[in-house]
Length: 266
Image (cartoon, rainbow, N blue to C red; front, side, top):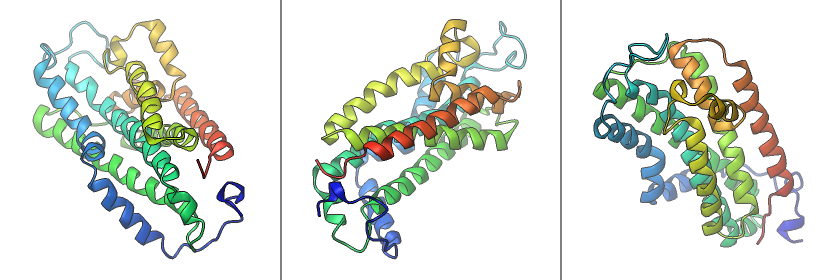
């Protein structure tokens, strides 16, 4: 029976090798300098670069209402860096890894072992989630130590937003990786989505400075909603119910579609 006809529910159910598989995925991730840099270090490097290279980033804002009045532009980018970390892993590394495993026959060979081929997806998700957490921690630590930036007024909401943003981004990444025939194709598609997502999230114009029309469109995109909700968690204007629902809807929709379209063989 080919792997393409082997449903996840009917594949072998052995999971005792999952810790070993996770450890192997972690070693592979750490041996990839590009993935390590972009997932772990890119948000921090981006924050430092913007904070020191762009004029006025460390000057107090005087033309915005509360709660942003008196903050610095660099302060507005701190919560955005968490969204950047989630998007970088979900749209660049996850799809390319999954597509490469299909392209090289890893998923097909996994079907002949006691470990289900879905184990690769689980292990990859664990490693990438851990990488996102480390990337966020490094960005926050740098923001506090280098810029003395304020931290989230509502940490619980910030964690919820980060979780929903990450699952939404990973859902898109799994969908891309499950359909693309080659790793290079998956990477290219992911990057095509990545940069518009960053624009709508406010990387070029932070949320409070974003034009109204763009802000309304961004609200219904997964990363735009994440950025707006993270601003609420950070600076406390209110509870972003609409943005939370948008991210949850994107998460469910992407994983449902990915589950139905994922190809285990080329």
